[in-house]
Amino acid sequence: MVKKRKKKLGKIRGFSIQFMPHSEIRPLNSDQRIRKVLNIVLGNNLLLLQGMLLPEEETRLIGDAMAMIGHVKNFKGIELAVVAGNNNDGFFSKMRKGLANALSGGDLGAVTIIGPATIVKEIKRNPKKIELLLNK
Amino acid sequence: MAIKIFRNFFKRVFTGIFRDKKEISLGFYGPPNAGKTSLANRICKDFTGEEIGTVSKIPHETRNVQSKKVEIEYKGKKIIFKMIDTPGIATKIDYEDFLKFKVKKKEARKRAKEATQGVVESIKWLDDMDLVVIVLDSTENPYNQVNITIIGNLVARKIPVLIVANKTDLKKSNIKKIESAFPDYDIVEISAKYGKNLEEFYESVFKLSKKV
Image (cartoon, rainbow over all chains, first blue to last red; front, side, top):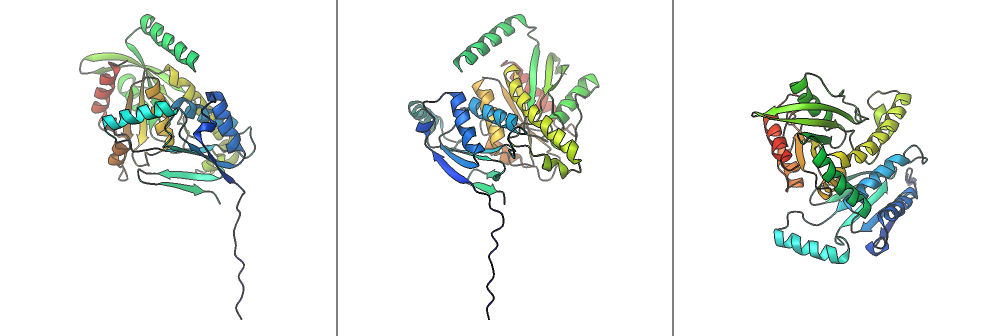
C-alpha cells in the first residue's frame, strides 16, 4: 500500500506582482510618484515598473521607506533594483540612448523592481542576471 | 524640484564666494559596514591624532552624522577638509538582524530605530557635500542599488565622486568586480584597517578637490 504523503507548502504569505507601465507615472510629480510606489509596496505587492525613477526620487523613496519603519506595522523597508541596458556602450550609442530617453521621458528599456523587505529577501544582481530571493 | 535646483544653485554660488575657499566638505558615503568610519578615523588619526567615531563588526555602528575639521598635507599642499562621516545607507533595517550579533532585543530595537533615522540624516546631508568618497567593501557584491542610487544622486548634483574599494587585505576582496560595476570611475584600492595605499587615496582626493 502506497502511503499518500501530504505536500507541505510551508508558510506562503499572500502577495501579488504588479506591472506598471511608465505612462502611469509620467504625468506625476516626484511626490506623487513616490507616494504611488509606496502605496503599492505597503500593500504587500511586488512592483515591476517600466523605466526608472530619477536618482533624487530613488533616494527620497529610500528615505521615506526608512521613516516608515516602526510606524507601519511589520514594515521593515524595501528591496530595490534597476535592470537597465549595458553601461559599457560607446559615446555615440550613449548619446543616441540619451536622446531617445529624453523624447520618451525616461529609459523605457529599464525595469525597476521594488518590493517590501518582508517579502523580498534579497535582489542579487550581476551584469548578466538578476535573482529575486523571496522570504519563506 | 525646479525650486530646489534653483535654491541649491544659489547656495553653491554664494557659499562659494563668501566661504573660506580652502575648506572642503568631504563626505564618506556607502553601505553599512564598508569601512567609512575606519577610513575617516585613519585620516583623522594621521593628521590630528584623534579619531572621529567608533567602529564595530555590527552593522550600523555609526548612526549619526559626525564631523571633524582636518588639515591634510600632501606633497607640500595643504587643504582643510570638513570630514563628514555618515551612517551607512540601506533600504531595509530589521532589528532581528542585530540579534545575530548577540545584541539584546531591547538594544537591537533601539539600534534599528536609530539606524533608520541615520539613513534619513545621511540622505539629507547629500546637499551639503563638496566632494564625496564612496566607500565600498571589496569583498561584497558591488551591484547594489544603493551604491548606484547614491552615485546617481551625486552626479545629478555635480558633486565630484571618488570610489574607494576597502578591505583589500582580505582574501575575498575582488577589485575587478568593482571596476566592472563602475567603469566610468577610477577605483582606489585601500585597506583602511592597515592604512594600505593611502598615498594614492590622498592624491585622488587632492586631484578631485580642484573640481570643487
